[in-house]
Length: 314
Image 1 (tube, rainbow, N blue to C red):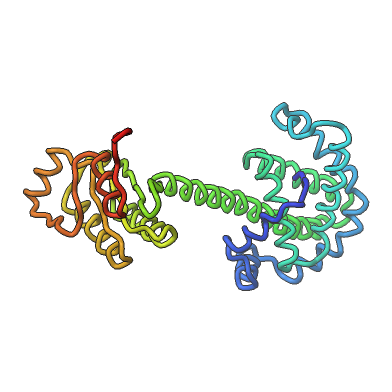
Image 2: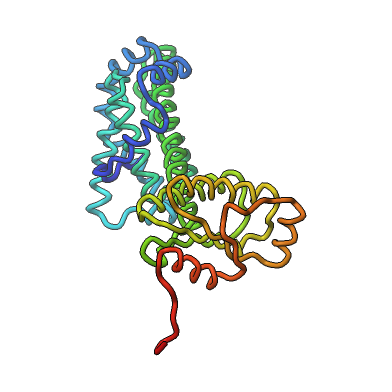
């Protein structure tokens, strides 16, 4: 397919994500049944490839340019000529007889370029179907021995499908990487620790508090308490829809961890229903300060650090 700007280094990150090391390369070679004989055949086919590269690339891009959704990837004739040259280089590399980690990295670079520009896998796979069709057509035209030609074409198929698998894996790795970054952003947004005043922090919790998120909350709280050298953190649970034994246990564990760092916890946003539930559950909240309203919690926190709120003019 199209080999666009490879100045980005995403492919190296994807090699790590996909664990593409020597052992994985050997495993893939074995699964695709790419033998040393196959690689030798590809080297033998190099003159064939050099002879027909231009014609195959032109025919290949004739298909691409005939489809409206594909034409949008080529902004002008200069770019089209450039990617055709790169495609010719890519095609000839199929016939080097080398299948090492450098080859794999180069193929991941191609896959990363396609993923980055938004080329969907359906076009990638459809284009490679045409690629193999063209190669088979030119091989059949030149062949004097049909049996030998079929063996040669099988070797070409193996290396092409090996490349296709790497490209699809690159799409998967890119998506996993994007999902991971999005999840990290969501986690950061879901645990926004705010500096209210010097040494006073506020964590407004919104949404359900399961075990996974509770761990994130504790990590965020402890990290920010240390960084801000905080003496008090307000945890506002007004936005937590259900406060049960599990949620209360998470809050108590966070409070205990905060106390070990020399800070105190104030729990705010406690409604009458939440208060009744916690009493019925027998939750002991004596280790933390509790108030109903956030404003009262802020006032208490300021008092704990030696500050107070006064009306203007008083």
